[in-house]
Image (cartoon, rainbow, N blue to C red; front, side, top):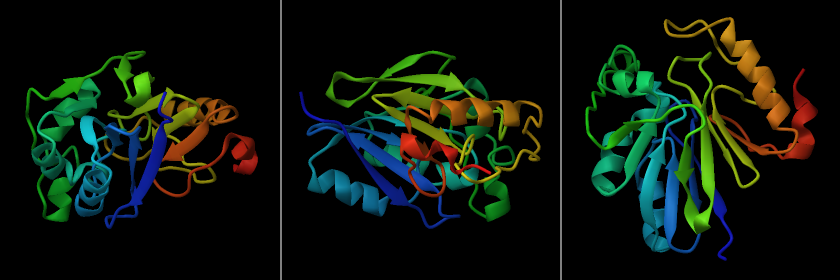
Length: 204
């Protein structure tokens, strides 16, 4: 079986992270920022994109989504039900405040539920679980020894929980749960560095 690899890209907007999870043939993308470097990587490695997973629908994690959908027309976009609604609403996804309105309504955007499994490269799966707190749209994905946690948990950083659709009570609960998961899973946050499981104790 081909080993699954993860390639990280740091985007130009607020330094958000995009991840490409792939084997030798297929790829899944986590969050949609700058298109060009991701597209070049896909072409250089002759990868077919099967899915685009959104950790949440704030502008810095979805501003490239329409271009991604055009570049890979067969890829399904996964988000929460709130995220599906927020993609269509420039106020909710904050794009209106960046003079770059994002409004996406498409049958290719699929709302996932807690504990849904999404096919990933090399016959693996990623389990989705809803982690609303930082934003009502937040979803994290775990599988194959990895945790893609977006802005729900950024090791060593206290993430904001004061946005209009944040939940100040739920946010610390999910931070604690995801931090606990990172004891045994490598953490891939929405900003900053990837953290190995053995370094889970870097939080203050």
